Image (cartoon, rainbow, N blue to C red; front, side, top):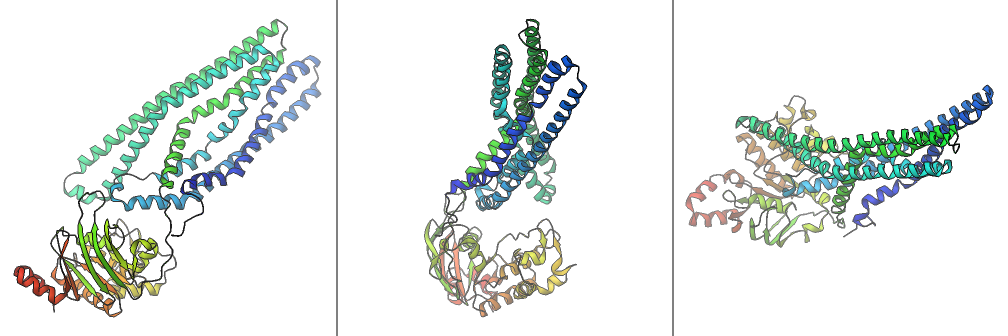
Length: 577
């Protein structure tokens, strides 16, 4: 194994955040200057009330006002720059983690047990990015400066400082209460919303089946019920958070009025100047402003904290070691030894004790009744379903020793249900390889005997496919999928029910493609229950109930089958030339 990175798996998110540390240090310095410049207003008021009004000097007022305008302009510029830097920190974080999050999402999709559970990796990453682009981080960076403003109030008068400290305790207590009451509700709302989004996407994808079976209203009602539950949970969390935020806002305004009254009482007792009285009220409002702003953005902050924990757990679980690159298996030789496979989410094996050998130029027809294990073997041969016992060796190496992406380039796989992704026909055939050459795409189409069919499409190879190629017939999708399997000149072809949707012309083209593949030294597996699958195959594997009942040369296996089950032999024999 070659480690994918020198860092440990759990380091992915912390390392990405550590990469933003210099920018965050800069933001902290900006915040220090901004909060110091926040003292401009109170100091201006202090000077106006205690000096300018007493001296009645217009020139002093103009000079002080000019200095105040200059300092506020600098503060506004720094605040703008701080917001820009934070937004770019979020963008860089998404850029650094995008590949890992996408890879984790796709690996989750490889596990059938996870397909019905929405993957939130990309949504979690977006939540982190949006947090940095909002005003919430600025408020969090301003929060540590609250003690400075309270300390200045102590310098004005100990009673004013003590009053501000008590008010701070009240405001922070309300903030803690807000966090506690909103956390559960927001988490529940996010989980139900994800389920509703997943259900909606599934309904949109399978709308034809839903409509044909008269299930549209039922599915709409189920979808609406989930959305209503999510909305209710969000409203409950919002109501609780909003009530506390309103109480915090009212308390801050009341405290400002109260400290003004306290200041006036001290002025009447000649223990404070009028300027300090006004400046104290402004300082108290400034001290509590970050708390109020944090409460206003608390749902977003809470969502980002949950996203960070979820994303860290997901990325830590999805950083596999990359196997050392193995050479191309050319010519191919496959050995299956005592193979047993359990489908994901199941407890019973679908294949038991399967053994076979096949080499370049062989075409193995895997036949048997429904649920005999043909598709399970196809998935095992591609490495999708790892064995629980036994081994599958390609040119001596276990499939697990191959890098999955490189192994996919050595194999051509046509699944039982062909899925065409949004894009052009050419892009689908080329497996969306960015450097695919047009001639290679055409060669793959010709190898699959589908070139003329593609040229008959409205825009030929540039025909854009939407919704899994819904505009194409089942046979057209299957033949384009066959061309995709042939792309890149794979060494081994695994075709699962390749003739399921083909007419006579399509079956003839398929048999010709298999014959050409054998002639060029490829190893071919054809899983099918239709007799036509045997036409170009020289070996037959007969499966029944997940067990290999027979394996060997086609005519020998069919002869033995004729002795035990003549009716089956007649149906299969009819396709053999």
